Structure formats: structure tokens, C-alpha cells
Length: 483
Image (cartoon, rainbow, N blue to C red; front, side, top):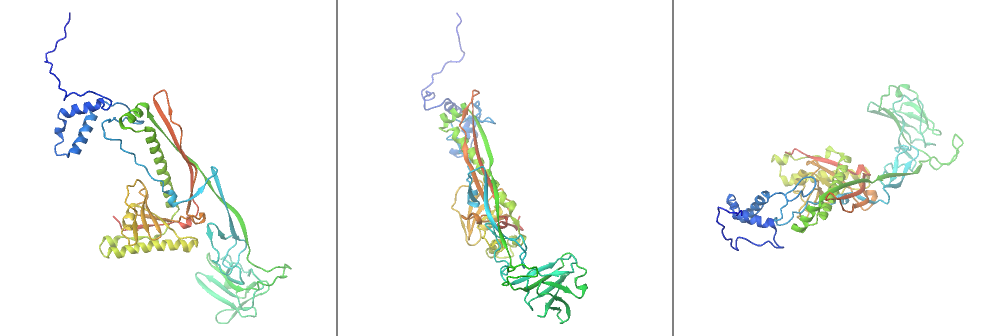
């Protein structure tokens, strides 16, 4: 009979060195204690107790064989003894704070609107100019469009035209001033009330027919040698109450005309999707060891990626649409060089921002910008300006609301040029928004499917559209002289 022998004397094991494994203690937890008893902590001299325990845990776990491939696409060593699973970074959806919103009832959403357009030329208003629409306001820019005054009507622009005629008749005698502009030199000629045009020295140079508006110059050199940019204009008054007949036998007062044109802009929702995979083993271990649901974690991660892309696309769209305005750039070199009082000079940056906002209103006569997206360096300067109120301290991921400065809500955008700022408009009134965001399909997930190869897969998707509908309300500038 073969008898098994050993050279080592078997030593009794006390209860203090061997503990039974039960439902509240894992095998790897016992392995961790054995590693600690072997003096692993000797190499962690100088660490605090908390740091030492953490380092011991990492060292002990790294020496164990990986329990499983935790997720696709790389294998992550499972750490059942770790205190808890660290949460993922999740980004907030900020784009609706900056963009106006549109409810999309179909994947392609047409937003119709009317434009009021000048049908004919009258004074300083050319034919085809949009006088008014939900996104354009040029009402009253030419205060004479409906009256009897015709101001700066262009009769010819450098094409050598000899025959000139005013468009609106009958002309009131003594009201006509014809200006001939050549090479930035303008010469006025005025009618004397009897139909004759005279220069500043009261010399007769031509005549005008009040009935049909025809203008003739006796001296042909007045209209010779025209260059591009040269022009002849007339300012006059006409009888806008006479209903005819005119020389052509037509009845009706001669007046400016406008018409309505139906237009639309198109929002087309695009699909954005992502898939996530994990093993049933990792799902089991995550639930068993950490009390965490991998399905919920995957959903949070996927939705956060989709949200982050929406934010990035939106801020980049505004940045691309913004009209660069160098006159609103601000040079910080004076502050950095110590040549001015920083607190006073920083308010000049605030002045530049307000001038930029005023320029948008001057140009559009519709709205003033109230949203400001800034790079990280611009954010540092804005936070020092008088009147800035920082948002309540909070942990942030990706773009975040920095605070408020007067009428501006300020957002710090890390994907933007650090020295650049972009202004835009946001309103509950759809007409006063710089850009619109339409969500056709909200963030949605498919059912999780477990396959025979022990993998689980789930999809996450959304469909949305975004469009800058009024680029004239977006302006950008830079901080110069930084380092």
C-alpha cells in the first residue's frame, strides 16, 4: 500500500487565521487578507491609513487572475473588494438654454412664414427688398416709401446712360436736386421751378420735364467718362394724390407697392445612435459584487454621449454662423503688462460686449443678444468683471453655465477657442431666436437582447434637427494679447 508522506510537520491553524467563507464574504476577500498578512504593506511607508488601504487593495487585486472580460472592447480586471463602483461622467443637455425649440411632428418639419417685399423701386428702397418677415425687420428704414418724397433715386450707375428719367410723376416744380457723382466727387444741380437745371453758380446745364420725369443735360461732358461706382441720383417730390390719367392714359396714383410671399425653412431630423455590449458574466458580477445594474450604467453612458454631441454641435453651429467683428475685440495686454488698473480696464471688455449686442439690434431692429458662449480663457476674464454673478458652485462636465453678466447668460464651452466669445439670441418668441432645435424622436433605447454567445447588446438613439435661422443676430469677438 502506498502511503502519502510529507516532510513538513503539519501545524494547527487557529480560528483567528482561518475564517469560514459565508454569504457575506467572497473568496477574493479572503485572498486580500492573506496578502495583507504577508507584509505587502511594508512597501507603503509614509502613506496615510486610507491611502495605504487603497494601495494594498490595488496591489492585491492586480496580482489576481482576471475574473472576466468586464465589457467590450477591453478587459477590465474585476475588483470585488473595491468599496463601490465609481459613477460615470454625465453631461447635461444645455442646447435648449441657448436655442429656441420647435415641436417636430414629422421627420421633415416645414416652418412656413410670410415675407412682405417691395415690388417696385421707390427712393432708397430697391425692388425686391424684404421689408418685413418673422426674421427681418426693415420697416421704416426708408421713411419716405409711402410718401411723396423720393430720396436718392438712382437714375444711372456708370453705364454711360444719356437719357435719364425719374420714376414717379408728376414732379412738383422746384423740388428736384440731381447729383452726379464721379470718382467720389459729387456735383449737385437744382431745378429753378421752371423746369431748368442749374449748377451752384446759377448756370443753366439742362432741364427736366415735370410731367414725365425726363432729365436732359445740355453739356454731354457731365455724363461722360463714368467709372464703376459713379452714379446719378435724384431727390424730388411728386404729386402722389393725382390719380391720372398719365401720359400713357393710365389712371391711378403712382406709389410704392408691396406684396406677400410665402416662404419656409426646413428642419430635417437626422438620426444619431450608439450601441453598447457587455457579457452576462460581467452583468452578474456587477450585480453580485457591487449591487450595480450594467444595463442602467450603459444607458446612462450612451445617453450622455448623445447629449454631449448635441451640445457640441449646437455651440459649433453658432460659432460658424457668427459674423466676426474685429471692432469688438478686446486687447488684454494692458492688464497683463500692468499699465492700467485691472478692475477699471476689465470694464472696457464689458463695454465691448455691450457694443456688440447693440450692433446686432442696430442691424436687425429685432432683438438684442442675451446668450454668451465663451472659451475657457474668456470665462476667466468675465468672472472678474463688475456685475458678474457666478452660478452656484457645482461639479460640471463639458459645457456649463458660468453665471450671468447683465442681460447675458454666460456659458463656458471647453470645445470652443479659449480666447473667443459668441453672442446669440434666445426667446420664447420663435421669431427672435438665432437658432432653433427640433427634437423629433427623444432619447430612446431598444430592448436589451442576450445572445447565445453570452453577450448582451442594447441600442440607444435620437433624431433631431438644429438650424441657425437668423445669422444676423449672431456675432463673435476675441480677447487679444493673452498668453
